[in-house]
Amino acid sequence: MNLRYRDAGLFFTAAMLTGAMYVANKAGLPYLPPVFFASLRFLIAAALLLPYIALRSEPLRPQSHTDYLTILASGGLVVGAANVFLFIGQQYTTSATAAILISLSPILTVGLAAAVLPSNRLTWRSVFGVILGLVGVGIVVHPNPSNLFSITMLGMGILFLAALSLAVGGVALRNLQGSLSSLAITAWATLVGGIAMLVLSLARGEPVAATSWSRVALFAVVYNGVIATPIGYIAYFSLLESVGPVRVNLLTYVSPLVTAVLGWLLLGEQLSLLTLVGFIVIATGFFLIEYRSLTHEVARLRCALS
Image 1 (cartoon, one colour):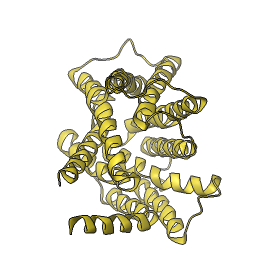
Image 2 (cartoon, helix red, strand yellow):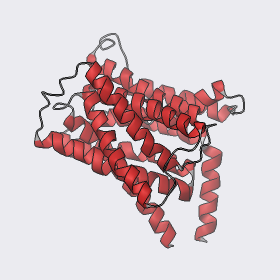
Image 3 (cartoon, one colour):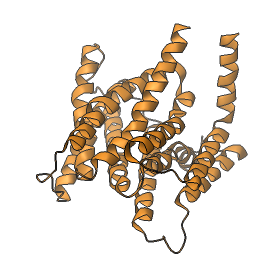
């Protein structure tokens, strides 16, 4: 019983922190250059996560080539590329739209894995789930000749690249089994990705020196770097160890709902009916892909509760 409450608390914590992160991004972007903002999020998080892992007496130093390769792949794709696209793209869309488009990443991961890894063949149900996910994105974007080249469409396209980067990173990491824990790998990846984004920010000529450090900007940086990212990662990986990847992936479909509510309450953002329908279609695609695993989890939960 206590373990069940613990898992529920971890799930709620991770969903709330992740959902609010998109709102903090949107609030801070008018004051902070996007790539610089993203780099601060992960550099601050790394400064907290790495000592935390060391204090737990958990192995922290990479021991093998696989460890280094995993850190570089995770830092470059899952942290670096994905968040560069996320922070740039989110300038032009609502928080909820960003969260919904990012929720496509587990579906893209399945599709890419089937395309490049022979052992990951798709069933007809999974194929239909991937197709539904893409259809859901089309509904969210709802392109037409009048908005095809609008700034909003550009932002959505960049956000799709963020989801694709997460998927490519997920596939690349599937066969890499290092000696460090997932949390330790992620902590190093936040450092690598944060440094890479800071270098990219300077290379892009972002006006870092002219950053407007308003109270909103400070809150957004502190929330993302001190609260949402390190605590969110700790909750996520604790939950992953306890309940497995299938139920953890449900976070991807709960956090956009949190984002939509907070975006409406704090930023006055509106969620269109088409965006909501698109999200439902994307989530349905995920449930079709994970149907067998989810039904197994439901049966296991029923046995545990009986």
